[in-house]
Image (cartoon, rainbow, N blue to C red; front, side):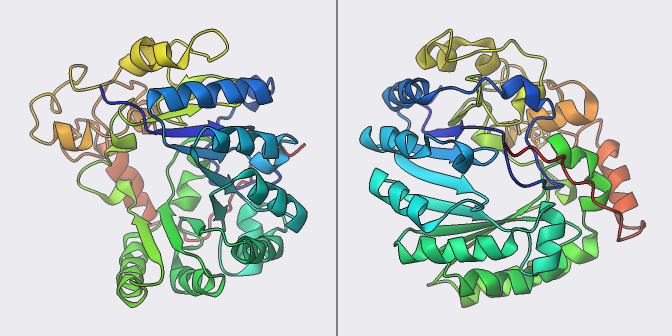
Length: 359
Ligand code: SF4
Ligand code: FES
């Protein structure tokens, strides 16, 4: 077991947006008893003692936490590198200045498209203009800016224009992440899964942009695993390098693992040190001993760790099976059938926005 080095601190699941691709849990009512400022301070202290260096402050929308400035200061005073993962709705200039003074190191803004009407339709509320303004503030205050765009069937054809937008706002890094089908995104999978032709066209554009922008902007492209021969090495392996703390203090190896039938572990009842090393939610799929065949005897088992446990559970009902994305999986047809439908079906299925949950 290695030491954890990345902490995803999900401060709240409240959010002003209603994105159709949201991967947060469906049962949001279970997460309303949010950790308070002092509890987060203790989590950060214990995380640092575990070896965590980076702290991603996420949600939901972390700006909805009234104590966000204090939370940032607590992490920063401990020497953690802090990254605010935000929709930027609510990132006013005064708030940004307070966060800067508190020591926030980096800002990541989600954008749904370069085109205002489409962006607002995907986000479920008018938000595009506010995001662009807020990104201007981020750059004025001297933060490194990452723009994150979740790609899918309804926006991937605009990837060239998305790249232009990222250049215009001065992004230092652009993450083009194909949708992962967890949480609410699972319900919209047919409307979100792109066709093979769409992906091929986007990849040509991204490859050219990477060369053109090499010395100005990092362009990260997260491939859509439904179209891959092998699964993604999800989280770098289960409970190997990352941990997530949910708004109510549950500790997970990845943000989607709350849906798995594993015993809960909470910072409210146990130390992070014990949870990381010994809690069943962490040890269940750590390493390779848990693996069934074909992974058990596969030479790639230390490279992709059998893929994603949450995806295996979502698709098969058993988190201990080989990720069906893998072409060697006995369940691979669960993926190929959906891919086949995406390449024959209609291109304009309606998106179902996530019900509004900002407070
Ligand atoms: Fe990875 Fe398992 Fe597929 Fe081998 S069989 S490539 S270890 S998912
Ligand atoms: Fe949970 Fe991949 S998202 S293991």
